Length: 205
Image 1 (tube, rainbow, N blue to C red):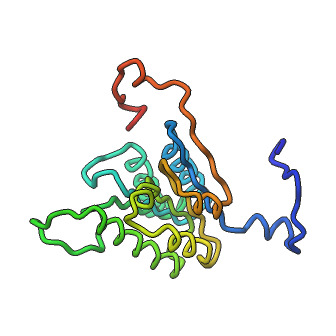
Image 2 (cartoon, rainbow, N blue to C red):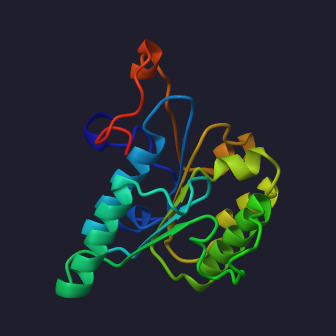
């Protein structure tokens, strides 16, 4: 695709303008670093275009603060204060799922929490509540069998409107890859951890 020009154009009766408005399902998978980073970079582009952005993190603890979260929420605040960009929501599995009512002493069931998160996303997709969704590390609940992959694929294929969805994580199921419009596999060539170096501020978080 030199200079962003498609090699072939389908005979689908759509104009270039209409084809540019089609919803995109993207999957970032593989063992290399950068899957979530790339998704959040896309989310920043979506924000700049005025799209309503919602991030759902399926593995990271609700107590774990990441740099992208603070940056995106700051952009959401800028939207509220000045009208620039678009709205931003950020949710993390567990206590970060604000729609789940739990007692303070409740024991966390990760599989149940993941299913509750997906149920909420399904509801929001049906209602077209957002324009751009990041389902961060969502491949793991699928890989572990917590959430049914066929149900996810069917829901995403049949989502109404022009809602974009980006899914990250290793072990993306083949059915999800086949349903996606954009699939990128991150392949590790070298990593600082290979030399015994731990995660660094400003690089991993």
